[in-house]
Length: 109
Image (spheres, rainbow, N blue to C red):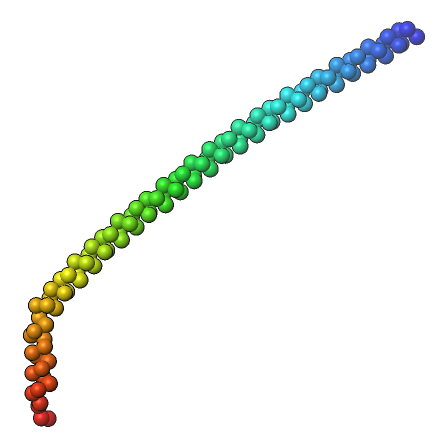
């Protein structure tokens, strides 16, 4: 019986070693997966940050372009309004005299 019980103890010790090795492999695998997940999450965060920064830069550029366009339109409008006002001041006397002449002079049909 001592051989049998010695063999049984040896079998149990081998099983315990195998179980310990399996548990250690599982721990290592879990640690590796956690590190992989952290790395992947950090990579995704970096990609998202780059994408969002590009979107922000585009929005800022569009805003600057809109501001410049608005300033150009306002400048052109002011110049055209000034030219129109100058033309009006120059020709208002002629226009009034023609209107008065048209009203005063009656044509018979």
